[in-house]
Image 1 (cartoon, rainbow, N blue to C red):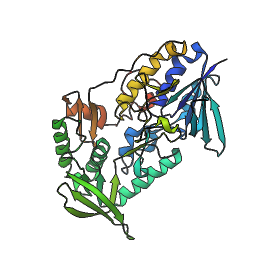
Image 2 (cartoon, rainbow, N blue to C red):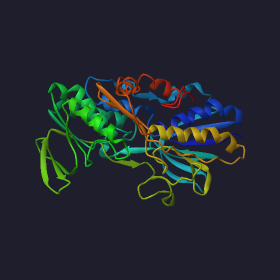
Image 3 (cartoon, rainbow, N blue to C red):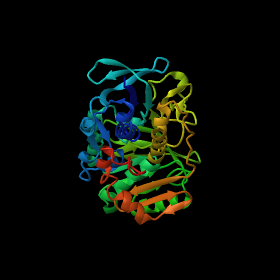
Image 4 (cartoon, helix red, strand yellow):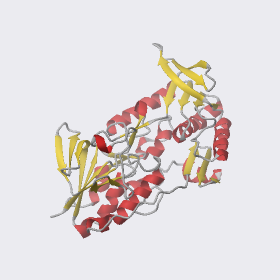
Length: 386
């Protein structure tokens, strides 16, 4: 009898895991993969930052039908379960799924891979917003708001904030069509763990696009009046409080981890799930946790893919009764940034990446030139073929 492997989540961690098992292990080891997701599409979030800016990129570049993608695999080895994990019971090796058609389904498994990722706060479409239709709606709403606004304030200057502000700068601010402001409570844009030179260069590139950068300042309140005008309250590091009027405020900070279905004792206060040094759940060797939801590394694609590759390479050994090897965390800081369609920046270890390199490999297309290959299981985003 075939062994059932349940994968929760069909994003940048769950989808390649499903492809790997189906391509390399399913027939050989008589496995059936059940891929569970509330969205019927694979969502290429890298491109969303450009899609929400009117007339820049179509949604067809970032949504890929999961049933169509996996149609090439035999039904004996694969099933797409269109629903959201509601209750996971690792004691009975089962998960209750709230199906998108309103019904419920209990799935029993031999092995489970949890790759449910995270959601952006404020209903922003930087991540999936519920199912595919809800995500399309969130994108359309933000795109219309951007179109109708003359002034835009971006809250947060991490990678998402910088890249979104860059898109607005390329499309509007550099020509004076709209004013764009980005606000961070740090001394410069990007996270403190990034190279100081990279942070300065990134801020300079934003300013070249005529984006106003406000540092050492927290957004402490946001209110919208009946006319649609938004008041943003700012508190400086010295305690000074001031307000800024804008047509549109867009938050880019904060993630909530999609783990509410898991037992309370498996969740940390921040919502991430505890993992062992082998990427398994504590006390449950047949449960693997990867990607944003795993309490292991920062929530970046490179880390998620490294975790998936580790689990996939050792999966046959595990299924044959062997011991899982330890996952070696990568201490190197690495990131590639697009700054609109004009500039790029990045870091690998302590070294800054050439701006032209980052522009060529990311800023031009935001990965949409190879997204179909990733969706179809031909390659990882970063780490080569699957």
